[in-house]
Length: 368
Ligand code: ADP
Image (cartoon, rainbow, N blue to C red):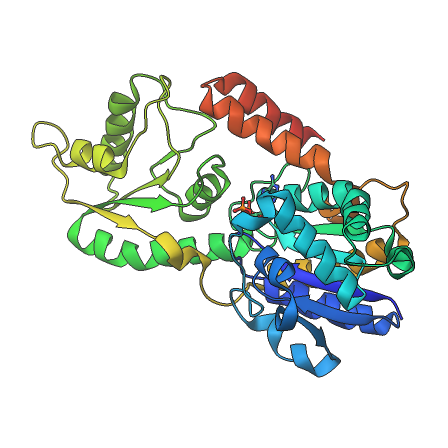
């Protein structure tokens, strides 16, 4: 019987449990044994009971649970070859040569590296006497498929990552709650949301809550952003708006690459010589990750989980490592490393203050 393992890695996101449920059940449906690797790559490196066989009923009720019930971790050992060697050994010991990984671009990079190295890792396990050649014979090819779990919607090549719509819904809910007091006291709120290199959450939350002003990393504000923001807020107040909401991504920058912080925005809105608004900062933080997955993420997790099992069973040594994307509402397989490299390019462009390039890359993504 073919053995397929599923793991979650990197930052958790709502919908990861839906992925595990879909993969476990689809694997069983396809006549395979399903395994879960607990604690991300740490589970592969340590092996033992962190790699567990799963039955149909083991994932009952998981679709609506937040976070990841099989755990996730950052694993330093997996960055180094000895860590990946231990992981290969544990996989062979369990008879597993097909792996589905749900995580962000870091986890998917690690996965691709692992697959590329697999033959040489097996060779080393034979040459050092850990296994006999006949023991590794059935495991010569490692099949890996990626699923993108991230609240930031920060991976190129897919319209939505698993978890991003849940985080967006949570932000909107939080802003709705804040609005009551903002409205009552005529207050201004500066709401900080997650997104270091990707402003999707801030941008979409701005649209969905009718925010007065937003800050995102990819499109830094002009040097006169202070005047621009104040005059817009003033305009809105003049036409009778009693509340002000400014949404700022954690990676917000100005044109010089300087960080724009919630405190800077707050001080400006509160400045007695300017607008003089009663202004508060709300940092949503990990609240954005919490709670159950919204319907869209449950749907995405299920459809993509099913496709991932099909892909891992159909993969051959000749096919490139793929990940499962959603593009124009279609669940499709795409080459993994191209998407990871495109994603890194955007982050590098932002870090080196080449914002035109960053925006160009984002536009190209949407035009795709
Ligand atoms: P995310 O998947 O959310 O981007 P990280 O970047 O922290 O999160 O990656 C999660 C884990 O994936 C790391 O702790 C490490 O074990 C593994 N990983 C990430 N990048 C690599 C890499 N270049 N080589 C090997 N393993 C990696």
